[in-house]
Length: 294
Image 1 (tube, rainbow, N blue to C red):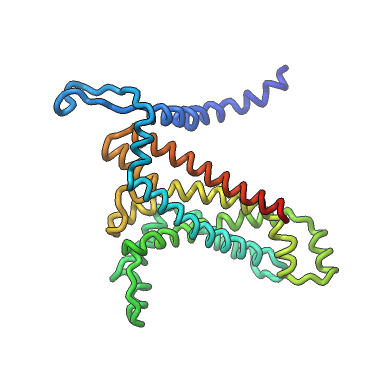
Image 2: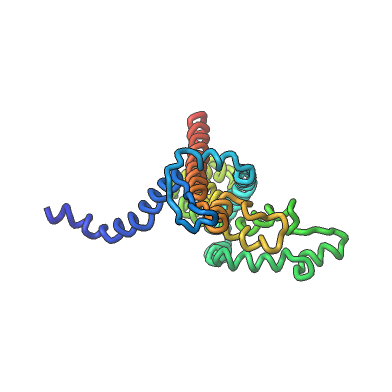
């Protein structure tokens, strides 16, 4: 009996922490999403009360043009940025795991290094490369007659995408490398005996066998895209194209801490979570469908 209860005793601290910091806040957010605050008196001096609002917050959130635009903006961002990042991470992983790669450990650490830099610091560093007058990139392009403003409303989304790609490509590369290292060496030996080229090995052996790692990185990236907050929030003071509701997370933050509408913020947070789940499920479904057709 003691042997059976021992694992639960050892996991108890983690389970308590998980419930308190994850499960309870999620339940509270869902509860808040069905409530609204009513203020009594001309200026609310008579007190406030929380009343049941039904689906009013969800209807208001889905009717909010800015919030819907932020969701669409993140879908576009993810379709381009995630694709570029995963392709780059896959190519880097395949190159570093090839037999002819020199100093793979050094380059793995180099490519992974940006992930160790906090997103806030990375955004500040890149902002100096975006601001005209401070950026050597902008000044160099101006010398050759190319006038570019990385913080313009039409460009700032892709400037943010560049920061995210620079930060997370190395992290995704390591996940893919871990899957590549799990491929049995016998498969490489058989391919070598058959005279397969490095490209054929990559296409016929490595890419099909790292599909689980690719799906993991894609799902993580989809979730991270909908949670985008720090980068646009910091660049907001530098670009007129970034509003307080530029991304779904920024919109929920604005309603919670600027407009003091906790119910609306909670409803938007729930919609963001459901959207991440649906998009991840769609990506997984497409992957399974293409696998069955092979």
